[in-house]
Length: 148
Image 1: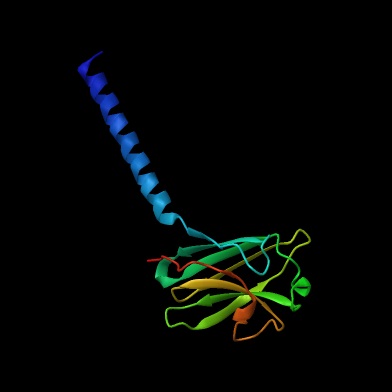
Image 2: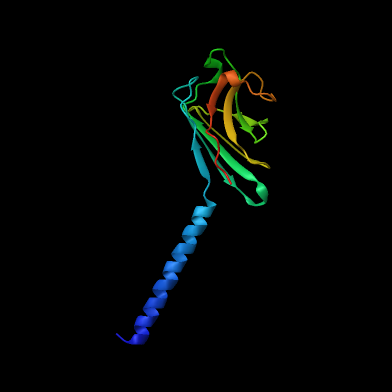
């Protein structure tokens, strides 16, 4: 093999290594953080998670997904809705929407926030548009989110 041929192979290998490194950095930076909800004492068979990703401009997108969740009318006491809440750094709660169960007892809710979330909750509620969570009927509460 000629020196020129070996030199070209080495340059090609360096370019490939650099490309893989850049792609890996991009992939790691674009990942969302996933938080699995602990087992619920109200509906122990239910599983849930929330994925949170910081976007440009201080926006946080989220996706909450649950499965094996009983119909809220089967709870004790019966309720009408499952509501997803976000708590901010000041301890304030925001109702970000309802989890509407499919026939297979699954639900998803996606959205975006203009502030940094600290906790996600899912509660059982009588009223869909309530402004205060019924913490006695907390189905899920995330661990404290570790976001930048």
